[in-house]
Length: 148
Image (cartoon, one colour):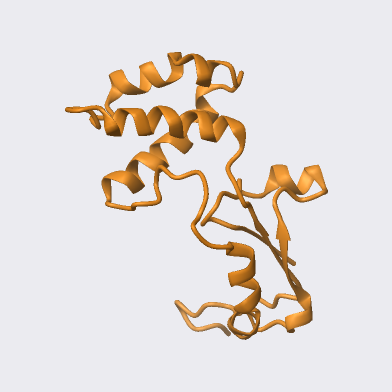
């Protein structure tokens, strides 16, 4: 019998970590609007009126995406920015994330308890479009893992 509160160990056989080297065009359009607001003297309120203006911005409207796609991304970046994350409004990282993760493969393999040859660092998006839909959207600094 299992003790109350005891967690069962999950056995992994394979892990793939998808890394984005840059944001998608629609994300870059949203970041451009966020950056302009942050740079505006007296700006940076990021309130409901700002979000309405964001959705009405021609660059964002040109993406053809629905607010349910745009607003969660925008809110996550706003939260990061307000928390003092200097990279929140950047479209890329100042280092090679895939190379860094590749260097960390021995550590990741040990932490995940899987053989190093069963762990892959791959470019976003996955070739399998069904997998890309199922995974969280990768972004620079926020890789998307897939475990088996």
